[in-house]
Image (cartoon, rainbow, N blue to C red; front, side, top):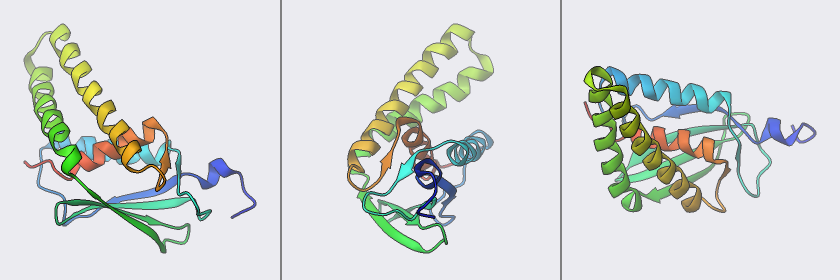
Length: 162
């Protein structure tokens, strides 16, 4: 595929979450996972420095309290695996879950202004998580902020418990 447009190569065409890593969760959270995967596949910018093997597949898992990102080449063969400590993300994930729970509760009973305020906080934490992922993956994975946001949603999804 080396003769094709770089935008067609530097993208994800499949994303899977390790079933063994996923905790049981609510319908809201399951829905958010599905939307994040769909949105991520539909629109993303994803490259692997030093490789021209895209489009790519991505498998996301938790293993021994670490984040595992396995990148597959265009033929679904493993290309590279990155294992990251989740310690830098723990506090942010805890805050994100708290705000998400507040948001899900608010959308059922709160006034629109309250929902909007909670959602602004949620988006802010989401952006912070995406930026942290971009920084931690620098030199390993190239992606834009929207792609990192969707990946952060899926990393968070691995931690959601019902």
